Image 1 (cartoon, helix red, strand yellow):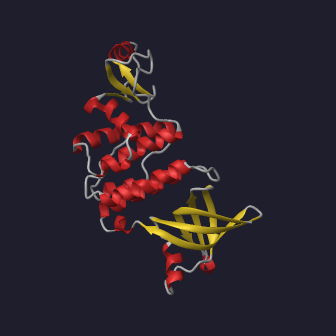
Image 2 (image 1 turned 45 degrees about the vertical axis):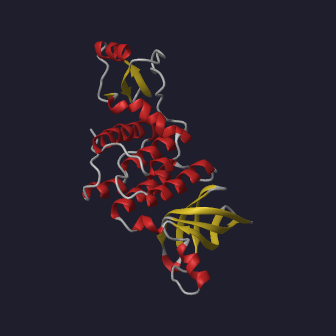
Image 3 (image 1 turned 90 degrees about the vertical axis):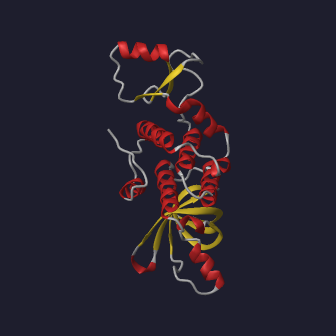
Amino acid sequence: MDLHGRGIVLRQTKIAGGRRMLELFTREYGVISCGSFLSAAGGSKRKSSGHLALQPFTLGGYRIREEKGRYTVKSAEAERSFYGLAEDPDRYGEAAFVLELTARLLPEGVPQPRIFDLMTDMFSALENRRNRFLTLRLAYEVKLMDLLGVAPRTDCCVRCGKKTGLEAFSVPGGGALCGECHRKLTEEGYPDRLIYPARFDMMNVIDYFRSNPLKRFEKLALNDGAAAWMQNVIRRYMAYYLDVDQLKSEAAMNQEGMLQWKSH
């Protein structure tokens, strides 16, 4: 049986005999692990398009043969290459982070069209933004968690439901805390290692990320201090609920001084 769909290569590995193993995120079928004998070399226009469709940050159309539970890419054609992502090391690092994070969180064989669209929107927004990419990444992370059903509660206190006086953010509690509940937890000796003050209007910023398209953040950005502080909190939240600690792409960005994120 042949499957036809649009997709983006999340990862690929070259193996013996000129074969490649691909982790392909398709809009129609979700993540599929498949092999391919397609040539990595250029050549004719058609072959060059197929080669390009196997590269990172390329939206392609794929014909995939399924036989006894195994999948093979029989043909591919590039629809759009987000080539601008590779022209700047900061932009490339952010795009690599998006690929790695998304690959870690998605199970195989479960269609996730809204997450697929979010990823392509993110690549487009990254191409169009010139610098200060961290706000875009924060927006992507919040929207991704929202689609996965694990976004923090920011409209009311997670303990008492109060909608005013939200002064803190509790990672283990799952979101906002009012001042009274925060004080009670402190008095009860509750460990505050993962409870943070709600600085930089954090609750409203998260709500704004959740309710606005990524395109809006092509020209909007938090100041560097606010973005770095919020990224620290959001990554700890993701590590707690999604078991995603520092990724390889983050480590690479750290080495180049692009990101300062440290775990306890």
